[in-house]
Image (tube, rainbow, N blue to C red; front, side, top):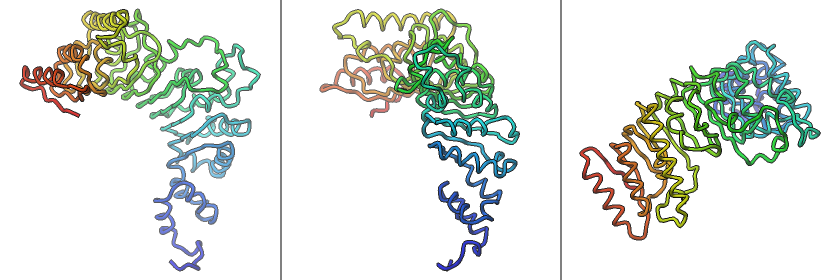
Length: 391
């Protein structure tokens, strides 16, 4: 291409080839320099394949762009990402106009919010601080809940508004990743919502009840654990993977509640929740040791009484978390995330007896690892199938 060649003289197929491998800001710049590109449906398709909004100005400009050709452009918008929140008046109005049901071709399937609580709470007046309010007063909650075509949802730094959004969402979600974080220092941390209960709202088993027949993957952190006396929960028969960490509730019935809610689970990943010192046998606090044994016993009794998993293939987590989980089912692949100290070998022995793995992945820590290594290899020697992967 000659340096003095005008963009209008470049064949469209060449320009589209360039746009196909260009980031969105480059595509947008090219469309602004050429009316043919700006009006082309192909340009809109390429631009809208991955939309990221991070400022009030971007949101308002994006709405104007979409409304310039709503019939074509709304049909191409399948994924939407928010990099931040706390949007102000004009941007909040633009989002409400963008999400109104008058755009029948709008079929967003993927929604990602890296600051979910700040996005959903945008437009909340500071006058509401420290007052009891209802979720109906959150201006963006209902517009986002109209996204009935969502299949893939990711929300980081979520809290009360995000959990309310999940309960209002009639969508058939397939994959969900939720981070219920306490780091949100915005307005919602100063609000008290009517009918809000963290133990219920931050429990994904309850919050995602509209997607029982479609959900396949659940991932996240900061979940509330189910109440020990609650077993009558929604059932998700198609969920095959759960990756979770918890911050509310008790572990005594975690195994049986999750086994009943996700009966066909194949892959369970536990991220560290309880402090490691709860599981160290030589701790100075006898009460903490008794606590871990009590939790383990409660989990085992619940599974023996009500049933455990039958299709579980892979379990990942710290030795302490898996120990108190007290599994009573065989797990072919066991991956221990943290190094096993020598004083944790009794817990390791118990876990291996619990799940009888075919493959064990672990690392052994300590200035003298002979006892731990010897125990592991002794356990391997007792099995014809156990394969140990040392890290």
